Image (spheres, rainbow, N blue to C red):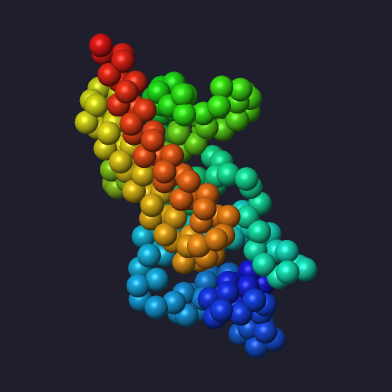
Length: 229
């Protein structure tokens, strides 16, 4: 149903036609995704590839969207991208299991996430509840873990410790991390636009995340300058 709705939107139709349903009848999710991607031009497929893995797209559609049966549209279930959204969009399930982080590495990731929350706390409302702050910290931890995986493609448990320490030790490496987050959000915003349209809540959420992450980079610079003054 969800791919039928996406295909109809791509064709410029407000509602799917009976033929649309027939096209996707009895297809498994991966097959439906492959069929939908075949409708895109080469440029749009490239944008989608840079933003989301195939598994990420399937996870996002399954867990982040519901179908409005009256209007036959897809509805993003959340008011913003939370930690689970960041995890799903990362598509880690498609990469297999390269091995869990060690206890020491997990502790360092948690410490980095707590430090980043302190550095960016001025960007959030002062009255955020404890559950929202935990979610933000979890989101930051997801980002640090994903960044370590990206920078260490042949990761084995224990390999990330020196790399994670370098994020604490160098302004240059922390800036690279923040820049990576902004670029990642930009790619995902563009991919969400291809999938769901420019006015979709999901695209707008990633666009806001892109802007916010740019602000994060400035906040981190200011925080470090204050700490070293």
